[in-house]
Length: 510
Image 1 (cartoon, rainbow, N blue to C red):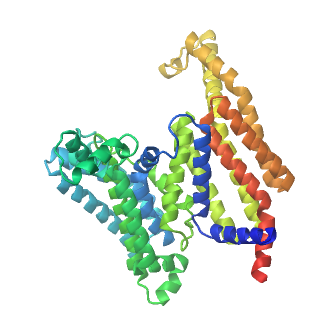
Image 2 (cartoon, rainbow, N blue to C red):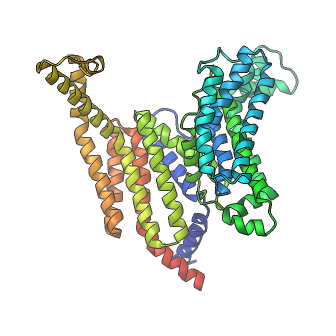
Image 3 (tube, one colour):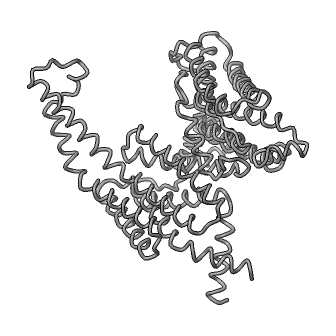
C-alpha cells in the first residue's frame, strides 16, 4: 500500500469522524486528558479512581443536561432547569425534615413536582403557543421565588441516609465490611477479598451517583435512537410544519420534551442531595447555563434537529474538565462564569460553521478556538494582576480622600488596606505583570494567525503555544497548560483544513 493510499484512507476516516456531531467534544476530551496527564504531578489522570470521581461530580448537572438535550433537539429551550432543580431539592428536603414524610415518599413527591412543572411548561409552549424562551424565563424566576417562599430560604437539618442512595452510597462498601468482619463464606468470600484488596485503587470512589448518571444516559440514548418519540423529536426540530403535515402530533411530543427535561432537573436534584448534607433553595443557580453549554459543546444544534445524547455526555465531561482546570488554576468563580458564556458562543459558532461546510470558515473557526483557549489560559495571571491593580487603586483613592479631609463611609473604609495586604498586592503585581503581557501577546498572535489563515504563521503560533505551555508547567501554573496544548492542536489543525477539504472532494468525485 502506497503512502498516498494510506493518506487518502486517513483523510476519509477523518472526514467521516468529523461529520459526527460529538467528534469535536470527544477529540477535545482526549487531548485535554493527555495534556493534564503530562503536566500534572501526583495521581495519574487516567487512574480509575480519578475517572470515577469526574463521573460522580458530573452526575447531577449531567442528568439535567440530558433532559435539556431533548428540548433543544426539538428546537426549543428551557431556561428554568436550575430553578426547577433548586425548588425540587428544597421542597423535598423540607417535607422530609419538617412534615415527617418518609424519605422515599418525599423523593417521589419531588420527582412528581418536576413532572408537574414540565407539564405546565409543555402545555404553555405546545398547546397555548407561548414562546419557549418567555415561558421558561418566567419559570426561572417563578420557581426560584417559590422555592424561597415555601422553605423560608432556610437550609434544612441533615438529610436522612436514604438520600445517599442517589449520591455518595458505595454499593461495595457493605460487602467489604462483611468481609473484614469475617461474615462472608462460600463463593462470596473471594469476592469480598478482591474488593478489599483493590479498595483504594478502584472501588473506593465507586458511587451510586456515577451509576445513575451512566444508566440514565444509556436509557435516554436507547429511547432517542430506537423509539418513535426520538424520531419525532428530530423531525419536529428539523421542520415542525412539515412534521405536522406528515401526521405527527407535534404538540404532544413537544410537551413530552419539556416534561422529560423538568423530570431530569428533578432527578438531578436528588443526585445533588445524595452528595449534599442538607437541602437549600439556592441550589442549581446558573445550572441552566451549564446545561445549555454541555449540550451545545456536545454538538447538538441550538436550531434543532441535529445532535446526540452521547454528545451531551461528552459535553458534560469536557465542561467539567475545563472548570476543574480553571479551579486548579485558582481562577475565581465569577471568571469561570465568563468562561462558560464564551464556551457557549464558540460552540454555537462551530455549529454554524459546520452547517456551512466551508473550508475557509472551518479553518478560521479552529483559529478562533485556539485564541479563546489561549485567553482562558491567560485569565489566571491576568485576573490576579487586574484584581491587584484595582484593589491598590481603590486603596490609594481612599487615602487621597482622607488627606483631602473627606469623611469615609463604612464601605469606603473597607477599601483601606494594611501594610501586609499592600505588600501582598505589590508582590502579586510584580510576579504576574510580565506573564500577563506574554500571555496576552500570545492571544494576539493567535488572533493574527486566525485572521491571516497562513499555514506558516499557524505553525509558528502552534509551536509558541506549546512552548509557553511547557513554560507554565515550570512557573507553577501547570493547571492552565492543558488549555494551551489543546489550543496548539487546534491552531495546527487549522493549517491542514484546506488541503483535507480539497482532497476529500477529489476522493468523493473519483
